[in-house]
Length: 347
Ligand SMILES: Cc1ncc(COP(=O)(O)O)c(C=O)c1O
Image (cartoon, rainbow, N blue to C red; front, side):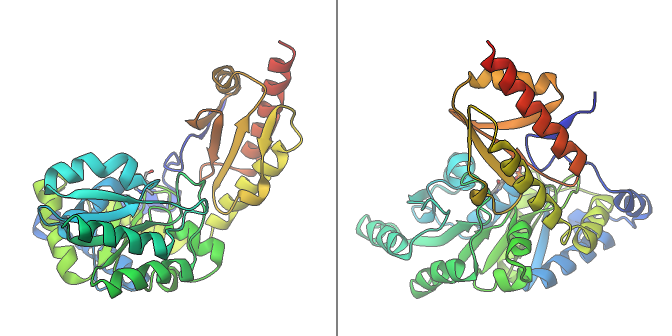
């Protein structure tokens, strides 16, 4: 039975074009800046994002840690959304490494940080004697179901940060999905952010990697943190080669992932015992709730039919679509969802 894996969007395998480029990549020692393919990828990513420089990181987590450490001082604070990936996943490590505090700003239902809330967080830190050194927003917003922040949302956050003399970081693990959904160049979307990290390993379909794009100074600091944290790699031009192919060929096709997520949500609306809102699908994530059945039994029923998805929390499940998921997979998934619901309804 074919495995249809929509637990995450990092589940796809390299495209044939990536394999060919990986096979032929020119290599060098990246720790000394001598890998020509990594250097080409970094220059390309910086240009596409409209930033001065970029560094190839092993993961989105290390990009986030790298940029936060680059802007941290002992006893200071970094403001992030309280439902962001950084707040839920990277916070403890960052706080321990930099001896500063990650402060959560309330996240709106649409993933946006309201300027008034950001301003209030600045004032609270000021009152507590903590200097704020960075503000971070996330796009697309993972835990809000892949929702998109547009240029105005990002500019509004940047306005508060810059008025306070602080840079804005965009955790854009899926920022290309956002740009495709908005049908604008990613550089326009990221214009008011001072630094941006995006993942090569998610919707762009690479086996690994994340790019941190920023001004030269921030990137230089992040390179040092990458090395000190054990993220330095040697002849990795073959991974960078996949990244170059991804930036050339994998951006526009994300519209297909979005259409597949929409089809999944629409197809599930008629299935008894599930709650789903197709209007909430903005990118490559389709979220739904299992109302009338045991959630564990529902997941097992799907897995027996070859379909794997993410259990976000409680009754909430989600499908991430990606390059490895075809239109046929989507139809098979809808049949599996329907059959599982029918089976559980029959007891
Ligand atoms: C918004 C966001 N940022 C960062 C990351 C971390 O990326 P990685 O898994 O490459 O460490 C994720 C992972 O899902 C994410 O959703």
